[in-house]
Image (cartoon, rainbow, N blue to C red; front, side, top):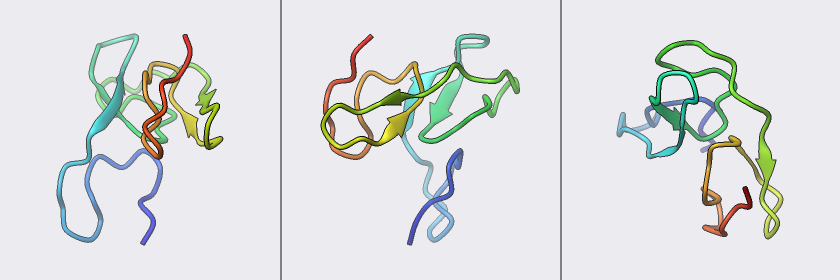
Length: 73
């Protein structure tokens, strides 16, 4: 099934999900789809859109978590 945005753990098996970026406020790990930092609560900058598949990622992400494409600055 789908994993809700901002989840740090898989709801099915409990495995920790890989972070896709770092918080600009506290440098904490940011899971895919997060709008707020799960560590400090700061609202994250607007998302980037992957040029290859169109998935939205946090602005701090360097790679698309869906297809692996490199995201621009």
